[in-house]
Amino acid sequence: MKVVINRKYSAIDSLRNYEILINNNCVGKIEPKGEFIYDGENIKEILIKIDWCYSNKIIVNKEDKDIINLEVSSNISGYKILFQLFYITFLRKKYLKLAKV
Image 1 (cartoon, rainbow, N blue to C red):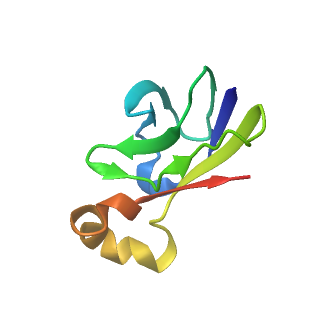
Image 2 (cartoon, rainbow, N blue to C red):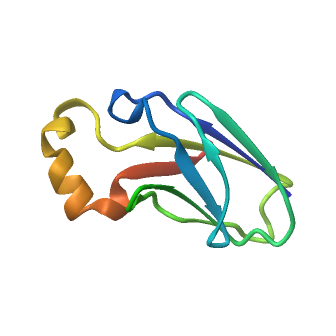
């Protein structure tokens, strides 16, 4: 199974790379506006991390296609920039957004 992750540009994290966790193991990093491709077996869950903040988990089902396309972006944009400290303290598991495309 192949996983393709694209990262949207976000000014708030533009100088930082995100860590990619597959089955709770770090398999690589993705840079701003970057693409990461992972080819492996027995993929059960995918998660993105920056420091102590995370994205939502994507659970991979056996029925999923051979190629899973995902997009990751920061939830901190627009007026939410004013609440950045709140996000990294209390909503740290919603700091990033990971979605199938």
